[in-house]
Length: 514
Ligand code: XMP
Image 1 (spheres, rainbow, N blue to C red):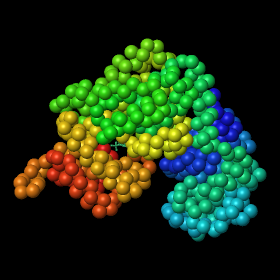
Image 2: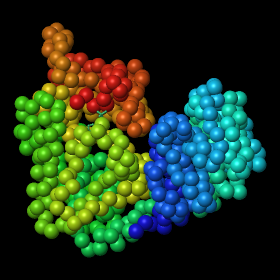
Image 3: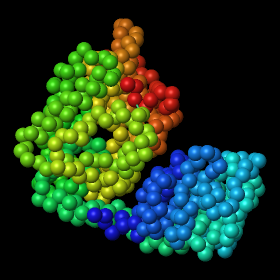
Image 4: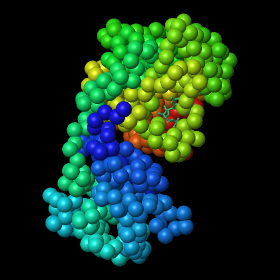
């Protein structure tokens, strides 16, 4: 049962034509207070009729290509407002009888653009910079349309037929480079579609707790808590709905960062009084990993062991009907479209198989983006330390201890990593850096310590910024910070004689070393 703000009649739909910006558009719309979902371009028109407005994303090629993604022209007869963006604008022109052609001078990047004052879409938007990225553009307007913006290269930088509430822009209002992009989207939502707004995380949390109460009733729920933000927030919502009928199993595989297991336990057991079973299985996992150096073998062993430990604990609880999972919206969208499945398949480690024998799943975060999950977490009073926790691989430090994973080497990495995190926080860079960590590389090298020669381990530091974890840039951390961190690590962590900084982006490297 959707909560009031999730009903299609009060929300928008982003029709995905394959551009890279569908999720960004949806997030912008939600940031403006309107709930929004992403659907593929071939979604039946009947399903779209219930929404308050539709936004077409950009897309890859030309509308005249043989397999060009197009929607049904009937969509324009529903009376539902539509905003076409970039390729989406060309789809609208093409399907309504206009013409699209190469402008002869492709525009990529910032472009000075003029807007028609009378357009609702451009209310309160002065002449300003927009972000263009196109070869083709509309060169003949469909009947009923007029041009509502132009740039030097593009006479139809926007077009509209206000009587039918159809609007299209050649540029990208969703990206930060378009100066008044957010104002244009706001105008579309509130002036054209006449949305009421009200989508925000406080009301989401309240509505979701009520919805969960109804969905779960007096059944029992089990949740695998990892301390990651998604499972933590999911568990908290369910806890607020059903209290002690929720049991969380926290499998501590001994491969967490320094002090992390204790923090998770402290927060959820002591502060929130959740029913949590911590399984200290470090010895068991490290025993299985003894002598193993192949990264895929490590992942497999940890994945299998995790399921075994979880199942054994679950079996002790007797009958539990439902399983709670921290699935978030990008997971749903990605698995639905089939994209990205291959690259991410190895990331399921630490997850549970679907046939683990529950009546059903409880997934309170299925509709939320990561930043929304974080805001819900803060609303629910989860400490910032956990809410802002960086992504951490399911197999934990095992994939950051290259070569054999021994208790000593894990401890060495935990210390080095803790120093790096501490220095990042002191420098105020912890929040603005996507992911950063230390790796025990397995490379040994000669050093001098005091009067003697030493032969020790090499720690690599890695820090990346990324929007989707599919690509990532290495971060240019200040030399002073790197210097201080290196100094502290070689002085405070016995056995480490060298520290290096990784300056490779993804691709060609991956974020993790293994
Ligand atoms: P890569 O190394 O593939 O990592 O560039 C992309 C993101 O995924 C995380 N990662 C994992 N997460 N289980 C997980 O839950 C895994 O096995 C795993 N391997 C990588 C990685 O930390 C980065 O955020």
